[in-house]
Each structure stands twice: as C-alpha cells, then as structure tokens.
Image 1 (cartoon, one colour):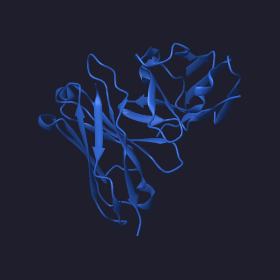
Image 2 (cartoon, one colour):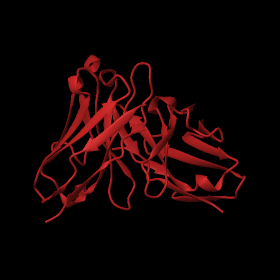
Image 3 (cartoon, chains in turn cyan, green):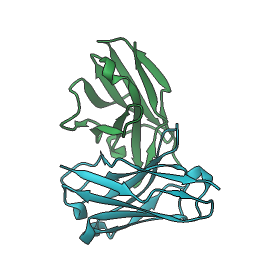
Image 4 (cartoon, chains in turn brown, red):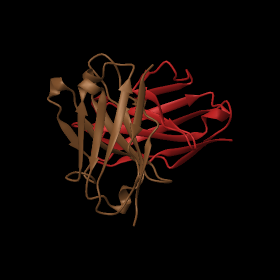
Amino acid sequence: DVQLVESGGDLVQPGGSLRLSCAVSGFTFSDHYMDWVRQAPGKGLEWVGRIRNKERSYTTEYAASVKGRFTISRDDSKNSLYLQMNSLKTEDTAVYFCVRGHSNSSPGGYWGQGTLVTVSS
Amino acid sequence: QAVVTQEPSLTVSPGGTVTLTCGSSTGAVTSGHWPYWFQQKPGQVPRTLIYDTTNKYSWTPARFSGSLLGGKAALTLSGAQPEDEADYYCWLSYMGLRVFGGGTKLTVL
C-alpha cells in the first residue's frame, strides 16, 4: 500500500525555521514527482511546491507565497521528502501535506495525513 | 498567477445529479492543465477522486466522473448520496505550477 507519513510539525516563533519530513513507502519513490500542499485552519487547500525526479534533475517549483523562503528537497536513498521553511510568518500556520505526484507510469494524488505547523509568538 | 474558480456552494437532492466546475482566469481549461479533483470531508485528509481530467482511482465511486465542459473542467456526480456531502477542490497545472480552486461546498439535501 502507498503510504506517506509527515513529521516535524511544531510551534515556532515568527521569523523562525522548521524542517518537515515525509517518509514514503509502497511505491518507487525515485520515479515520482512530489508536492507539498497546505491548509490553514478553516481554509482551503494551497499548493506549496513541487520537486521533480532525478530524470528531471530534481528541479523545483514554488508558489509565490513561499518562494525564496521555503525549499523542497528529497533523498531517494531514504525514500524521504523534505520541506525546509525559513522566515516563517503567522500566515504559514497550516497543516502541511505531502502528496505523491505522477511518474511516467503512475498517477499522483496520494496524500499523507499531514503535520501541523503553528507560527505564533 | 492564475486564479482558479469554483462555485462556492451547491446543493443536490439525494439521487440527483450535479456538476461542479473549475475555471481558469487565463482562458479555457484544457487537458493540458491536467485537472485533478479532490474530496474533503470535515476533519479528514483530502482524497483524490479524478486525475488528468477524466481518470478515476480504484476508490473513486462510479457515480463521479470528470470531463471538460464549456471551457472548464467539470466533476459530475450522478445519483448523489448523503455521504457525498463534502468540500470539493480542483487543481490545475500551469507550466509546472499548480493552483487550487477555492473549493465548492456540496450539500446533499
């Protein structure tokens, strides 16, 4: 079964940093693009960013709201995805989900259970 | 950045049919936007129903279908059930960037 498990969510002060992790199993992680999506309390879904696979040189894309502050990386040897969040703002408070993207042969759209990040003083 | 629009709310009668749409501020939605549809019930993780405009997962109930309709992506629910009451989101791809719609709150009443 496809599984994605996020961790690392915490309470952090404005201006601080945090690193989220997503451990995956049940599929060939290295083949897939991966996304981060967030949801602020009581709000809709917001795409945060994407990292492509090795075939596409691990290139990344980011939403304008996080570009320059957040960095997505991956370690295919550990089947793990990461989100480094710097210069955090109160509006970054949200549940963060990792989401499996597509590969050449399989669709995306598989979600982890999410991890809560609270930015507050 | 493109804006993706959805109906804020819709109501359907049990057993009825409803179509949710997903539009783009940049023009007509095409298959090249690789539309996805997600369902989220209160307190739950979103669940993906449709990928790449029309494709279903093994868990997608047969009563849901995806299409392109009138320049928008569309999610049609035929034979609504009480358990289909939820928030529904679409996302579109723009040259690698993804943008979610604001979501549609579907009431089955």
